[in-house]
Length: 119
Image (cartoon, rainbow, N blue to C red; front, side, top):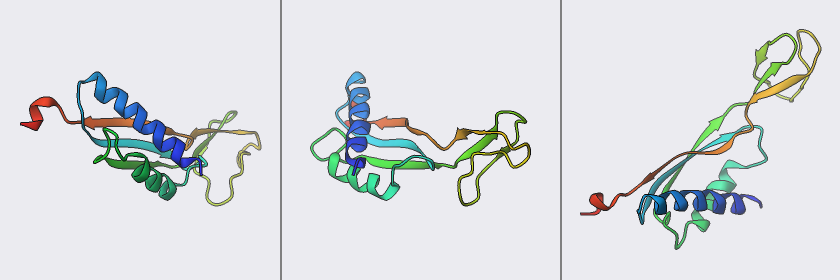
């Protein structure tokens, strides 16, 4: 299960940002998760619950935005979302498609608690 190492990396990114802002508490971490990654959302959510213990993200909420897979023909420019099986050939002109969206695994934003908020 590689989701645990991904969850740890997400927390490390968030902790670095929190420390940069002199915060000791991460409230929310939002990520974008592409449909064409090998990451299983439920496994990542579980891994996050385990990995966040005894970190600045111990009470943080993980928000995941699913990014659909979108394909575009490199020749004719036709854009489509695959229905079932992934076919990387353009149905219009028969040439290869490129993945425009769906490979994302990125931290979108991090909400941290600032010193003034703790009063």
